[in-house]
Length: 271
Ligand code: HPA
Image (cartoon, rainbow, N blue to C red; front, side, top):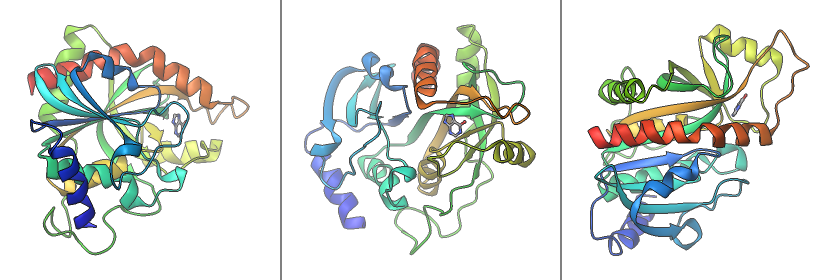
């Protein structure tokens, strides 16, 4: 596997004459931030050796290098979800490549279902911690010692300085936000009322089908992580006849995206 990471990183390195400091992963319906990136160099995933190809509607599947908020960055427009059938090492493949490219920070966005009864569709949640409810840990298997230790400490995964920068930006821009815990599970099913209830009992505030695998791998290799969720729907286990469609999730994410872009850009500017 390590050879493949190197092949991919070297392919990109010879085409890019700078070291990106920050990687941004843009979630479902949240890809518009790329319009803010200057001096773009775009690689469709299909043209990058060893890269999996994204299959989900609404995920363009491009790696975009450029400048944002005065920083050299690389954005993943579209990510690889476990529910699409990728193995965990495929879901997290780009994160290993990022390390070899010299990336120090990972910024992740996602669409998520609200679990906390105070959360409304359209709200933003800065992720303070996560629960890994995927059936497999992405670090399972032989440890890649050159990237990180066998048993990573997980007490401070979401970097407090980055959270502070996000809060300062949100306050300055008068964007309301929550801070809460994200639980990641495999999908592609949304939750049953009983599962939403269970996740609330676990202490999670929002749920989605991504983010946790990428963040675990980034943290393993000592990247500083920041995550933010757009609450696209409210879970109402008390009201089980309320349905959620993928279109609603997508449309809500797109409508909130400008606020997300402001917060992420604010964080990046001040890193
Ligand atoms: N559950 C899981 N993933 C999601 C949801 C949800 O309610 N909304 C958006 N992604």
